[in-house]
Image (tube, rainbow, N blue to C red; front, side):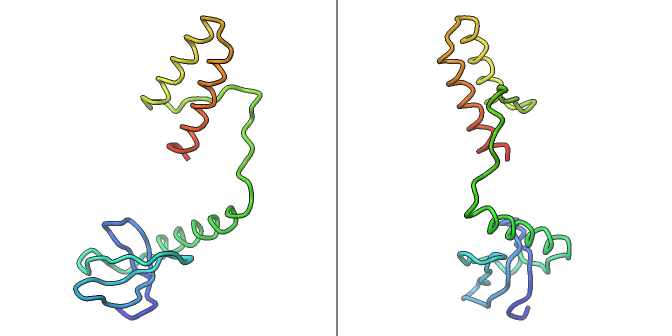
Length: 123
């Protein structure tokens, strides 16, 4: 491998720029910049064009969104759970039980927690 070559780390599941050898490891730099990481040379292969493109798009989207606020959620409707997600199902159950008790504060709390869960675990 030559410095500057784009490679895929099969353990980290990430594309990186080959920077050089560091003892028994190779040093890789993330697409778009960032902290370098070490990888075992046996776990590194040349990146496919599709992997390079995908990594480049992710890096560009990260740069574009770094200074801009995220999308504004539609707060006029309750958040929808992701099917087959246990955490979503538990939060929906809490919301339903709060509605049955006419506890509107707890309904709002469940909606906030569900939105946060969706944002963090289901991007």
